[in-house]
Image (cartoon, rainbow, N blue to C red; front, side, top):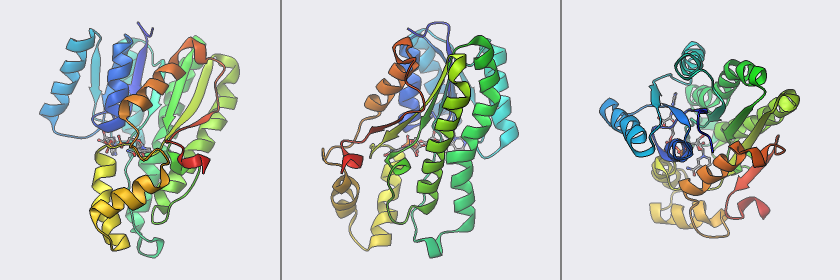
Length: 260
Ligand code: NAD
């Protein structure tokens, strides 16, 4: 479905981003993967995508806190593959702390990675999309783009911001064949969630098992973690021609969390 298209996916060395990379490569798109990790592991991932799906995969080490590196990543993708057709803003981190103790540098880092990086990627990739009259911008937001939880002030603020950015870009790009949508997962079992379990336990003074049961899945009526494949499948649909009229949408994939 996406043969000869190029998808740039930020934060795709792990978790949801990696699932997007696999899903888009499976549809025939060349992919640019990005994110941190062990260089040998990343190279194995990159080669694995090329071998398994018969597409080209490029790795960009761009740090999403660095505007110049972000612009270089988009330029490299355009130079290598000729276009950036699908842009998925997905890089993200979490930090859990009461607001009075929230480290200032953590606030700045979360806003930079989870929100501002998407401004920079869109700013760089949108002109090409508009000129070709086709493009798909897909932002990984979160149920926390729609509702809040305590101790996640920076994350909730960044994700609400991503929702606003998504709607604004959708309006600006609407007559150019370019859509912009946000996917709002509930709790997906990935390293990001796994890592916050001990912090949540500390902040709330409860056991790690209790965090999973009474904090994370308490909000999710299905009582199941969302899978990375379910999130990626929605992104593939949003990139299809069938989804051409879906734009500016903030779409929950949260097991009913935000219905409550
Ligand atoms: P993850 O920790 O598995 O992956 C995060 C990715 O971002 C990694 O590839 C990491 O290297 C990359 N990254 C971090 N800092 C970066 C930086 N400065 N520059 C470039 N890359 C950077 O996490 P995940 O759970 O797969 O999360 C992916 C996205 O999904 C995030 O935006 C997150 O907020 C969102 N999300 C996750 C969940 C969940 O339950 N896991 C729920 C809702 C939304």
